[in-house]
Image (cartoon, helix red, strand yellow):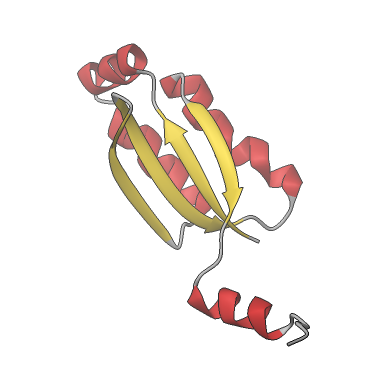
Length: 99
């Protein structure tokens, strides 16, 4: 299932990771494991934030996608199922709506 993994990085821990030179390595290693369709980086509510779109094959994969961010960056994580335009069209086509 296509998911949005939202990663809110703790400011203090991510600052320390930048100073140690490990932030980029942590993100790169996580991206290799997750193999995202797309990943975007910004700020939200004053925190460094990543929006990572990827295919979650099974719920048992959730720990391996989140733990690097929890352990290395003190992140707050959320998972949200998402659709692209093709998925939306397929879902709408499957609906039976009486008119």
